[in-house]
Amino acid sequence: MKSVLSTPINLEITNDGKYRLASVLVVIYGKEPIIVMTEKPKHMKFHAGEISFPGGKLDVNDSNLLETALRETSEEIGLTITREQVVGQLEPVVTLNSGFLILPFVSVINEIPKLEANSEVEKIFHIPLESFLKTMAKDPDPTHNLIQEMYTFEYEHQIVWGASARILKQIQSCLQS
Image (cartoon, rainbow, N blue to C red; front, side, top):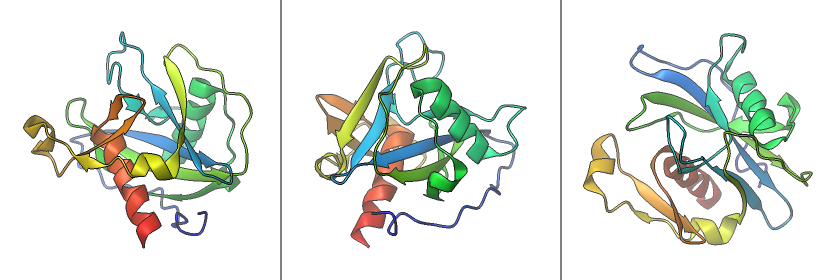
């Protein structure tokens, strides 16, 4: 798994100023790969109630987007990942409504400690990766397809769509090649 998702880390990102910069960390762990995702609380300003990866917007104190992803993951779910544990990154994705350009980084590790959600996280999911990726479908909502082709994934009757689903589609494509 590590070698398939190992792509060189390139912290340079092209942004024409149209989008706000953000990053997420895709954490995959275990022999039977498990992926960590979170549910945002319903009261959040952006992406309320959505299933997503730990991460957030670039902070003025962050030296780069990888630092953002690592900091946000630690804050949101209490998981400390080192730069050395990040095996690569995926292509940036944009959000439809909130105007973010998100750079996803990938960490593949053997095991993780018990995770603790902060106020930005309603629930933490530990999702079996292979069966989860098999739930992929075309997003039936035509308003979601305005920026590019969209997909959905399903876990425990929760629908993952938008930027998170496009990140999952990239993971699926990496694993098939």
